[in-house]
Image (cartoon, rainbow, N blue to C red; front, side):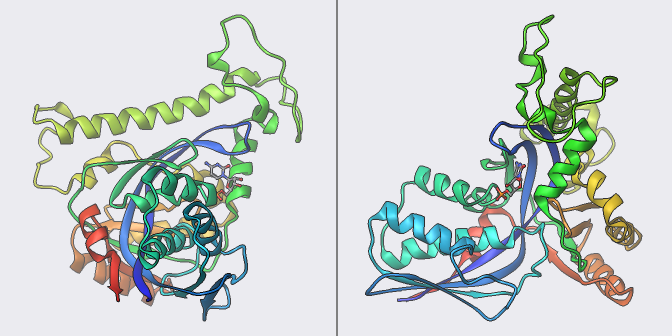
Length: 359
Ligand code: C5P
């Protein structure tokens, strides 16, 4: 019997890129936030074998490269279930990157499959399978405000904050995530660092020879062992801001940080003040000036905070009220931007609204 679920999108409330790792990924520190925009996923199981992906949107692949295909294949193997599975994707989200659309689709398909099969995967298997398909899948197994570390796949629920109005802008630009990471590496000192263990872990006075696998050697002026330190420092800096934010929101101790700012304000705005920013802006904005223009348009339309989401091209703004967000979205559309008003989704709302129907 078919199971229908909502596959909600996410935005990144800040993202810091750390050092490149030996496995080709980068250390990350980010805060994911689920929002109300969503696709609809319907999963049905029957006799036989094979996985079929149905989607009317020609931009969505229907072969084994589809994230839903990949996750269903893995889940069937772990569950030792031999069934024919049909995943129907009703695409409502803009397909531009940064919203985690394909990642959310996969997690929605996984959970709908478990329900359709009346079988449950252990939570650790679920997280592992999701992380194997992509770094930003596991967050959708948590929902709400989620801390992401490692390559973004290690996820920890943060406290459920009140919903906040937002506007999502999706410019018609495709940003390649691997290319954006590569450009970040280039700016941070070259791909030679890919090989190196973090310099700060080496005993003082024992610099290790850095041999590049690809790309050029580092210029002599920039000592290689200092660069990962810089990446790491950036992560530590955001980590400190988040710690301050968490300890402030979890404890009732008075703090200078918030003195005079008023506790009636949405705590998400305190997070903004913790110094969140998205490192991808530094490499993506120079390449696509229309995206920094989009961020400025959101700010002009009244956003209290505006940012690129993930590696883009999605931009978002946070607003003080739904009315202000709706007005801003209207204004942005009149200016020619593809803009949608939405609201951040608490973990409770995410799971309450997740299941549409199950027969
Ligand atoms: O995990 P995901 O499939 O989303 O990653 C896509 C690509 O983005 C990876 O192959 C890698 O090149 C890059 N990436 C990275 N560091 C991360 C996440 C992704 O370098 N933390």
